[in-house]
Image 1: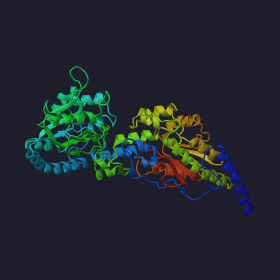
Image 2 (image 1 turned 90 degrees about the horizontal axis):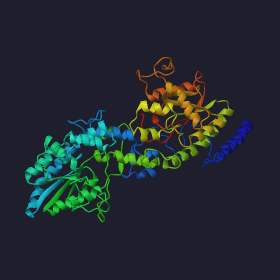
Image 3 (image 1 turned 180 degrees about the vertical axis):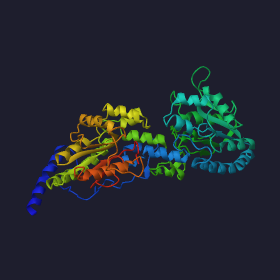
Image 4 (image 1 turned 30 degrees about the vertical axis):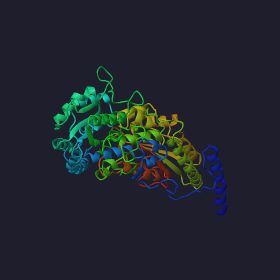
Length: 550
């Protein structure tokens, strides 16, 4: 055995030379073959999603967090849905939900302060006032944002909702506003809605039960058309005023009229920044984020979004975290864009980005072990293979998911992309497949794409440089039509197989005599469901915060 072992080690050096010759960094003969499952230093092999995240509200953490450190957008959506009692229809529960309960607690605590605050102001000879924002402070936009817009704001569609006075009241806020007014507070509305929407907004507020708002005490933003012009009491650094400039200077105007704003209530930090209120109350809202620079020279560190979050992948933490503890979906989108080098067009940078660099590093760490394992097992006649998922493992879907679908998956549109073979290769993965193949491994594909998409997928893979995939070693899912039926080696708990059932049993088949009697030395996927279920010596999770398939 010693001479044979020596020959294998000498040949292994040639594999390392082959790997280094492809220009992949971090490859050396010191990186030994590890025959055990999932032992990759520095790479998370736990087959479960992260639950703790650090995320800056402006998206900048996409440059540093790594793909697994970015809250997955599908998990964020599920968490938000749980919080609002949305069963998946995009319609919030109007009777009971974690959001309703949280608002009730916030409002109850604030109501208890009203009398003392009023009496204190009056005793000083002040005219106490409270300022309220509109959207998601007094009027509730969830159904529009989610069921209608699917988290992609459309100002024309928003105007339809505004003019149709379609918004319900924000939970508990009618009682709070009306109680404050009855107590003697002067009540003001201050919204980013424009002057053309003022009458409809006042109508909507009255319709859902608010009594204090009038044309005189409700401030909307100018349009720049006709008589709707920027008021003299607002001066801005540039022609287009920021939200904080508009709202803070309007509050200053209210105070210049003789009022003391004892409380300023809003669901966005930009509703509250800039001063001119004794106290600010932030209402929770993870469904959108409207940032704005503070006024020059004003520092309000307390009026800033959270950066630390805990989130379960299945959305269940929406029942426990509270609105401020849920990653804001707009901040998540910005973080994902930063990670993929997307300048805001929905198109990923194909040359350089944090994602490309992370993929390059993962592949550079994986190649030595994969190559040596493939080489050694081939010499030992163990029939080694690696298994690769398709979407975001071998083919890159970002531009479809974001520029085209705006993070709302459409299977019909996906089929258009598939049949037209429009996907680029996932960064660095062509190199990995090539090295594995040259080192003695068979390249096997295993995807959730269906049999009707198999030929086009193989064409796309060949088009972007993969050479090892064939019709015989590429597994697609059955459609249930004609000859495309569930194979005998896959048995599932219910009529509709889960991804894990389909993929793990297919891997078991691949390793069986009937499937070729391969030894799967490594299984690569961007979803944990690509990897769970065994039948692989090694699992490698590739980063992908753009969707989640449990």
